Image (spheres, rainbow, N blue to C red):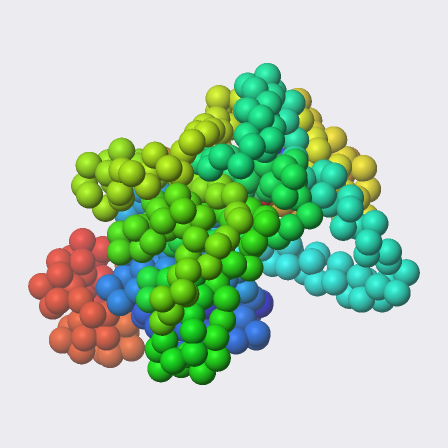
Length: 447
Ligand SMILES: Nc1ncnc2c1ncn2[C@@H]1O[C@H](COP(=O)(O)OP(=O)(O)OP(=O)(O)O)[C@@H](O)[C@H]1O
Ligand SMILES: [Mg+2]
């Protein structure tokens, strides 16, 4: 298994390298920043372990650029809830707060390894069975199963969404990450008279600002250097259908007037053109940002905000619809069993209780991912609490101690390598001599 470790802190990086050095199943390649990693990462890597706060590029931005190409684990010294949730969104299954017990990291890596091996054997047998597969049935099944709504509170939301679907009014979906805003946007489109026309989703945060205008509104030949031929924008492409503006709060202020006009007047102009083009689209937008705050800070236009939310729909977090947790989990379990041809499994009572009492900051996305992993990795016909890997946080003292052990081991080895020349060792360690001296005393490493 080939693992990339991206960590700017030299001590942490070296400690991890040392920790894995004896383990012959792993080939570790360590990078001091994401930019170096991006140059080297290729198909031979299986897993990326990354820090978040790094000077040149943030670890989350790095994961974003990797676009789910690798399994990923986050290790960070400065964990905020937002960052943890954003990591879940980027497909990260394990998130460690420094200082952590390296043994736990090792366990997470071994889990990932098992998952990858499982997925690979599945892929191979899929290739073998491909000719027998009826893809059309699979697709329609996917559609049918996309949406579970078994709680009373979600039923109300669904009713509201259906009412909205009957009209052409702009809908604003609000709610935490992973609650199903995109699922609802789709649901509204599918249940509207526009269902046979395109549904085009655009994430405002994912497209660089300088490209967003031409993506949305299109351009004429010569509008900018690379515009060698005219191109319709996404609003035109969605004609007669629906446009889903995801993370609308991230829309650059400079483009907001143009969007307001598109919504109000139902017309746009391509870049480099003065001709107006009529569009017939319904706007659905989504946000988990504090829009009032953005309006107060003058980064979001109030008039646009009111236009976007003719029908505001708040989607409750999973915590507010606890009665949905088990139905969602059971549904996902059945789905994963069918998808991978696993033998039948059920949740144990303890596992159910654990799921019911967990925080689920990543909402449905997190729950579904935890169930999928548990279904694949658990042995036997019962999914136990331990198979969910929803352990309570480690006690700080305990884990700090183990990181100290690692650090002391690292310093000892470097000191031996350079015959206890402290100046040289401090350079290799990237640690000031004073600090090194202090640590040598603290760990009793004097020759
Ligand atoms: N009611 C539901 N039934 C089944 N699956 C759901 C349901 N709601 C959401 N999901 C699944 O949960 C995941 C997250 O949903 P979605 O992407 O719609 O969330 P979101 O609110 O747009 O999150 P974010 O703010 O992070 O973009 C998706 O895989 C989606 O298919
Ligand atoms: Mg979304």
